[in-house]
Length: 211
Image (tube, rainbow, N blue to C red; front, side, top):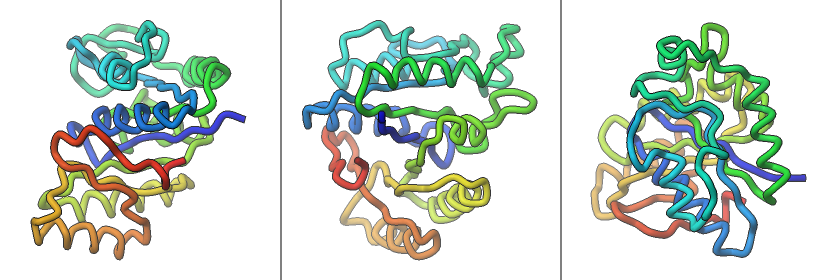
């Protein structure tokens, strides 16, 4: 049975794609056939999230095969889908994920925005996570304000029946007293372990507690 993980974050531009790329790369370097999947992608940029992860991880395949919905407007998926008259269907996401599962031993799925990101009028990111039957990892900033946003994200996930496997702090400075305390307080208040800290421009990540 294919194993996998869902990467979400405390908000937009926290570093989900950067962290996802490091994880997929590290897993593949262990000799595990790890794949990547992005249910919905907003913004007409190059490289987009999917292209960046595949290139970083050394997956030489067409990026369009790893994303279900691509929208040009750089807005929330629910609004982008409305603007382009292309509603997001949960059945398509499940079907595409299952196709990718067949091709890989492990699949990392990257969400959009934060955990409350809407995909449609009656479809939120937690619905997608539960439909794919995956645990999540929360990517959070190591900087000021992260205690509040990380605790709220973790509690929201728990209250919606989603298991949080761990927290990753991005742009972590191990010499910054505030960030050291942020890590300690996040673990204390959530009861969830910070399984990795990533310094700015890190090119590797320890994945022992992810697999």
